Amino acid sequence: MAHVPTLAASILAVLAAVHLIVTATADDAPLPRVKKSDIPAVFAFGDSTLDTGNNNILNTAVRADHAPYGREFPGGAPTGRFSDGKLLGDYLVEVLGIKDLLPPYRSGELTDAAEAATGVCFASAGSGLDDATATNARVATFASQLGDFRELLGRIGAQKAGKVCDLIRSRAGRYRKSVFLVSVGTNDMMMNYYMLPSGRSKYTIDQYHDLLIGKLRSYIQSLYGLGARRMLVAGLPPVGCLPLQLTMAELRQPPRPQGCIKEQNTAAESYNAKLRRMLTEFQSASPGARAVYADIYTSLLDMVDHPDKYGFVEASKGCCGTGLLEMGPLCTDLVPTCATPSQFMFWDSVHPTQATYRAVAEHFLHANILRFDN
Image (cartoon, rainbow, N blue to C red; front, side):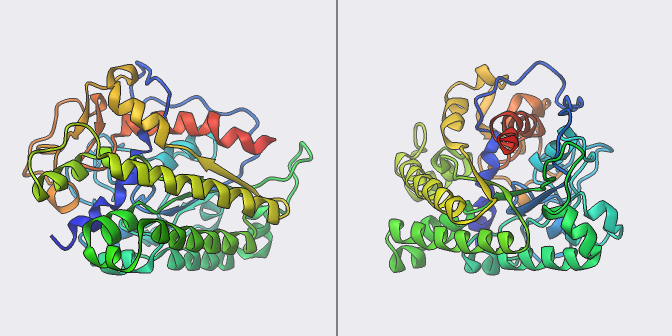
């Protein structure tokens, strides 16, 4: 039970919440690429929403380097991604025409500096803004992820580091700037506040939100200091709609809630409002910065309420096992899985399927990434 709260960390994985209709195209088919993109690289920081395998070498229960994870991934092998296939970062680098997949920095396999310069994932499943979140889960803190990025800049050298950030002009005469994708915060709420009494005994929910927003502001300021200018920061989803959260509520006080947990969703709305204000203030005070807020809350509610509109037949439970509790070490090849993951919004009780991530990537491209062109 000690690790269950940390696994809930991945709720941001419900980035599935987009108001795009999932097309009838096979979910493993290539996405159309953006023409003339000036984005040279994508760097990802945060939790299991983005972690492409950094936890594989860690002594933690928050790992997905075992079957049935990766079932729909090219080659059908588990990679450490908390899904049946690709994640958001993989699709983003694909549609931007950068490369096919976003590699994990800590895999030990990333030896080519040129490859690293076009994008790397530093995210660690189970991590958060509060160091206690990552420490309890035995995963990488957000601060250590920033440390890995500093190390990378040193490895690739000053000239390429400049290209990675913002110092080289493209042929069109515009600055080529990498995108820094951040998805973090849900683990803090799920583990340190809702599931553990220690958080609630120290802070009101508003106070804890303020603490997290303050830490996030400090982290993106550090990224800015390292040369980052284009930042895409995801807010919290309606965490009260996550299958695992509903299960935990049922275990505490049966029966299972009908619909989402209203109080948790209201709290997420409050956090997101504070995040939007912080990003606006940060951008105003940081010359050349574009800090874009990625709203995953509003559309996710619509996806949960109207799954058929998005091409799903199931949005209340995952594909793995019962879909109500299994994830991480509980989602193994010893439990059954659904026949068609692409018809499920969730792969396990927290994380979305590859089909969902594909839809999210399309949404991020048109609603968020292209805003960096302005």
